Amino acid sequence: MKIFLDSANLNDLKKAYATNLIDGVTTNPTLASIEGYPSFEKLTHDILSIFTKPMDVVNFEVASLDAKTMIEEGIKLASLSKHVVVKVPVTQDGLIACKELTKRGIRVNVTLCFSPTQALMAAKAGAYFISPFVGRLDDQNEDGMRLIEQIKKIYTNYGMKTQILVASIRGPHHVMEAALLGADACTIPYSVFEKLFRHELTDVGINKFLDDWKKTKFKIK
Image (cartoon, rainbow, N blue to C red; front, side, top):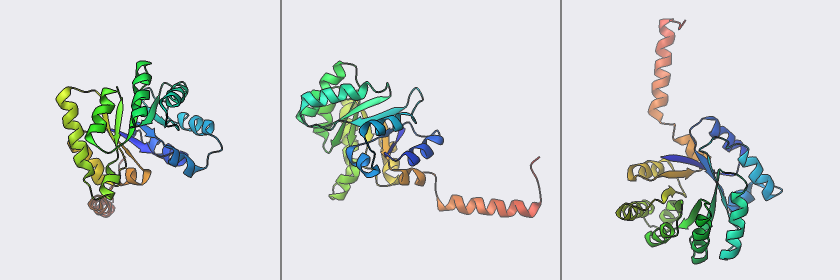
């Protein structure tokens, strides 16, 4: 399963990328606004300077609602780098834009998905990724991971190639459940990425091993 960092923070992106365990990044207007970039050009330049490996994926989002402008923005975003995947919302205009961009050979991530039928329409429009927001569904007392299960079933039924990119991740449990359900990717905040390595019993075991090693007075030569 691919792991993306859901962030526009350069320090977090660099730290995560240095582990060689992430496959890309997702951004959106909210994340960009938090970081206070002076321009969108600066944002895209700085992020693309980090993700340079051949298979890296960088998701940049359009900032319009009508299909014509989304297509124009998508073409501009895709021209920045071969790593770019263009994000559009799962609206009627967004799917029209997705269809056209896909025809032009541009990969599209259809985002803000909250239902199986939205995912179905995105796949029919040729989406490269569908991004279901599981955490936001959980916040509304719905079962976000049930949506992943339903989308996976639909795509499997019809051999649809759209990849499921689980978004709005709240914790490691979402990552685990996404992996068990066969999702293709997760995009996670840096705080969740750090937790994927951790378990209190691992810490206890390490401390125990080190204490016992000191008692032996052995050295690795």
